[in-house]
Length: 229
Image 1 (cartoon, helix red, strand yellow):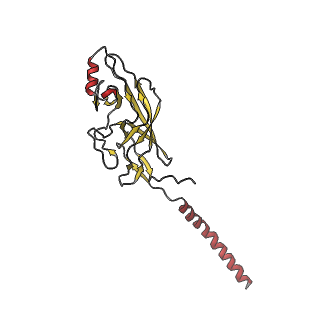
Image 2: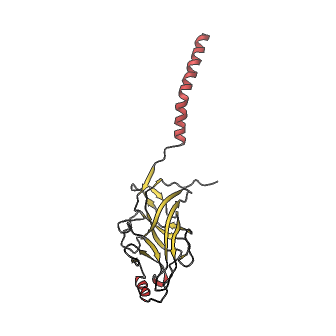
Image 3: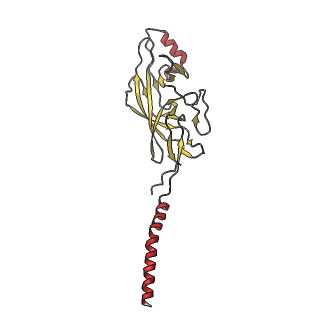
């Protein structure tokens, strides 16, 4: 009888030892569920609002600035990835002050990362694009802009907009380039006066523009950070 009991204990112990790894793996999987990532395609344009004032008169290469997303961004399947109110970090890559002969000031910018309200920070490769507000691009219900009109354009802020504000200019195709937005006539008039100094690029806080995504971004479904007690 004792021998039978001993054998039972041995068999039970062996079964437990064999089962433990499987049980532990199941518990680990339950505690750390697989995260599904979704993609934001290259060519997506995110509408953003500048959080501070920029000027070609005193800005400098390497200066950083922040912008706030105006609309949420979803995956192609409708999954929320970037909520409204996220922070896009920008950097000035080149700047030139206004000069004589009517040459306006310009500011080149790039965008390096996005910080979501839950604290997740994602690196991006972004450039200046049209906002889809008041231009020829279409804005869809997910807050993105079709990239057909902005692809391969080198855009920058150019001085000489209406009331001295900045306009976005397409530089491809010549030194003057194609100016986009209000104030085109004002810039042309300044350039026609050889001895008159051009206007500085003054981009006011609150200015809306597009952030053109050059490389795909992968993100999980957005979840708000848990409330702190």
